[in-house]
Length: 219
Image 1 (cartoon, rainbow, N blue to C red):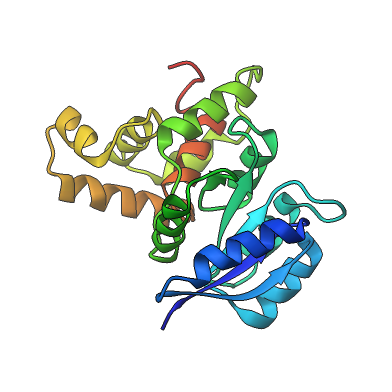
Image 2: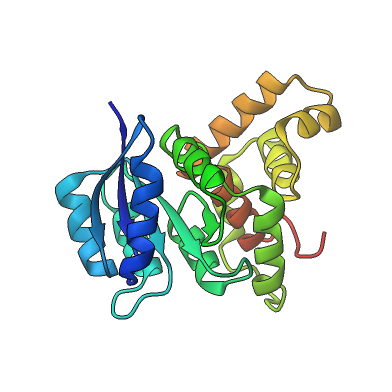
């Protein structure tokens, strides 16, 4: 079955361009479009797409609110937000709301296609380093944790250690080298950590690590 995609953007030309790029792929099918967040939520409920390409800045119900509503439902749909510039506070809001990553609107077609495939497969498409820049930019002024640190009490000491290293931008291989573990063991720790904390992917783990104060901005 092709990967089903819903495109959400208030600009018709943008929707047309994205549709042309994605529909040209044998393994991707654009099943619908929406011009605002409210229509996007309704379309997800009706069409149950694998992936939503979500503009974050729209009149009325914006992409952050729509992402929150979609991820709060029982839908298996994953959201990939799109923005015009990388240090966008709306993107951080969307990541907090459960988006699986973000892309710039001027992303090359091949990278867009790869990102859709990655998200559909359950991966996040934003590197921890990019997320770290966002978080450092918008959380640095907070003197106290945004989220209760007790949320991490469910983790073992090793899982907490892995989460901290993940949040600093290290890959699985780099974490494995740092802790003298195999990559398979690191992957297992990350999987258990995500499950215990109810997180969808690595991006949300990075966000939570900063919001609970496990990792400090600038580290």
